[in-house]
Amino acid sequence: MKKMILPIIFGLLLLAGCAPKAIPVEEAADLFVEQLVYQKEDTDFEDNFQNGADLKKGFEKNTTAFRDTFATGLVAADGDVSEETANEITALLMDKVKSATDYQIKVGEAEDGDSIRNVTYQVHGLDLVTVMKQTTQLVTAEMLKNTALAKDEAKLQTETVKQLKHVLEAPPVKAEAVNVMLEMKPEKGQWVIVGGQQAQLEGLYLAFVAGVKDADTLSTNWQAAQAELTKELEKQLQK
Image (cartoon, rainbow, N blue to C red; front, top):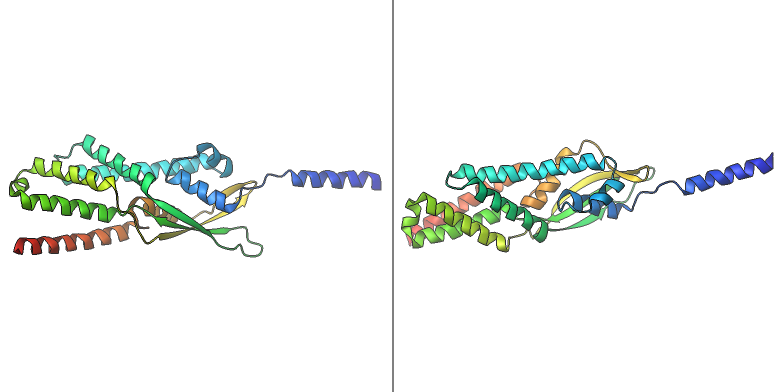
């Protein structure tokens, strides 16, 4: 009987040793952002994250929604900005998000008996408010040099697009990191994003594309920038 038990135990140990093991949490965290923001590593992502294909679709929706909102905003600001031009600027903006932004990862210590890992992304994202502020300053300077520009809406919009492209050649990036924390856990050899974190996922994406982690902060910062721009213009007109 003992001769039969030992091979069974040995076989169980072998099976346990062959069980799939999730990649290290730091690699998983890095892989997650590479797919979410930079849209790289498709195969590795699906191999290492449960419901990877579904997560990818969600990421693509985030990207499409932001691109459409930004492009629509440019067109809505004035009808003289064509949809083609707006899409061109938006595509340039998204390219700069991929090439100019950076991030670091901090992983919290796992608590005893808890497989959930707290992953904090420290994101140096695109400073979208400063992009728009610098563009406005450049356009204003041109208007002050050529007052006729303000009376020609088509030329004004052309100048705006030109200056926005100029700013995006070397876009401002947030010097102070925006911190966004996500919870993930290993399960059956893959990683799972803990449920109920939609706001954090959206915030992580926004940290890269706008340098903030929620839309309210973006709105507040832009309102403050507009107030500063108004004061600057008033001082220039008084000279």
